[in-house]
Amino acid sequence: MKNDHLISDDLIKKTEEFVLKSFEKDASGHDFFHIQRVVLNARKICRTEQANERLVILSAWLHDVGDYKLHDGIDRSEELITAFLQKENTDNSIIEKVIKIVSEVSFSKGNIPGSIEAKIVQDADRLDAIGAIGIARCFAYGGSSGNLIYNPYNQSKNSSSIQHFYDKLLILKDLMHTETARSIAEKRHNFMELYLKEFYTEVN
Ligand code: NI
Image (tube, rainbow, N blue to C red; front, top):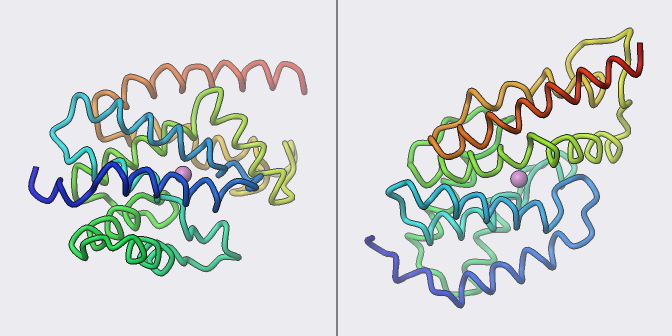
């Protein structure tokens, strides 16, 4: 694909190292291994889609850099991603594309991805928010933000980690863009339903 040669193996390797350094100590569910899983998901989805795979992989590595959740509510993604890619002498056309993809991935910003590359990264990120791993991340994020596990008296938005299933996690399967992500999401969704059923059996 056009401009593919502008994203070298070396740049992807350097990006992985940069992300490892930046996210090593995260305890909010956005650690290095979350990002690594998103890259693996994205690679899997790419097998059945016509997309610029190198652009997808580079954007997947960078998708949580500068995220507002990790920077006291301030979105620094454009600034930090641009600084890193410029340091690595990346072509401006690639930097612009990565910034656009990353800005379209976030659930809370409510953006709808315009390109297949952004759709794949968004699907890959959302897959890591559901199923067994999604459950683990939900409670890790809740704990790191000081939220309750469950509050039977309050079922308003953001009231607990269990409530987050209804606010977001159970909705994600219907928001997938690609066929591959949809079929993986189906299985993970069913597991969350089963988990919640058991959870309520134990707390009631
Ligand atoms: Ni993410």
